[in-house]
Amino acid sequence: MSLPRKLLAEGLGTALLLAVVIGSGVMAERLSGGNVALALLANTLATVGGLYVLIEVFGPVSGGHFNPAVSAVMAWRGELPIVALMPYVAAQLFGAMLGAWLAHAMFDMSLLQFSAKLRGGTGQWIAEGVATFGLVLVILRAPGSRVAAMVAAYIGAAYWFTASTSFANPAAVFGRMFSDSFAGIAPASAPGFVLAELVGAAVAVGMHRLLSVPAPVSPAGGGDV
Image 1: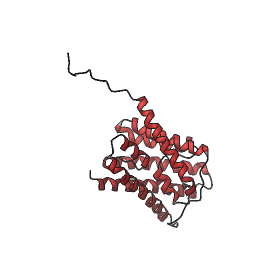
Image 2: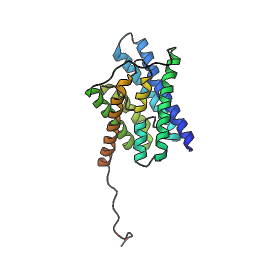
Image 3: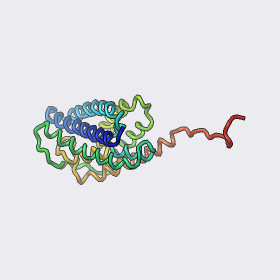
Image 4: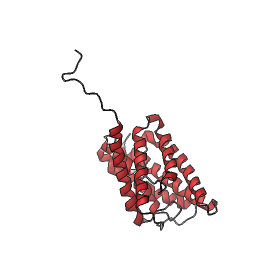
């Protein structure tokens, strides 16, 4: 696959992911009658389904990262050329912003807006570190044929067991800044989330190495005696 085609897949996939997350949040909030738990459940189910489909559709083209932290891990492991990392991140961030605007357009909302929803504090940052740690560990250790399902299932669970509702994605943080909706995050809260996510991803890489069986070392000289 050519790099432009991969970047198109990453940008489009991230845009659709943010449209799913933000759009389902808007719909859930409108239909839930003020029941926040019901709104979060609806938001979760839509995200799980959308994420699974998007990874299956775009994974064969670009890897289906939709996440700068995941792309950084793949570049560190040599599975993504280092020269492609920044273009991947740029495509993901741009796609995330477009996805927020698309969600607003579908619900007749103002396209250009910034979230006023503050999300911060030690608990929220720990939650984002845990969410991203788990996500990256699942990606690194899941059987290839099950990555999409396991990632979607993990994110669905993390919506509920983390205090932050599991963004686990710097691009998602970026896109949600542009939406003053149920799924939004205030720009002032974004740096803490992104830093926690990057730390969580790095810890996951280290844990994956600890859990992996070392490759056998061949005897000096090689060959059978």
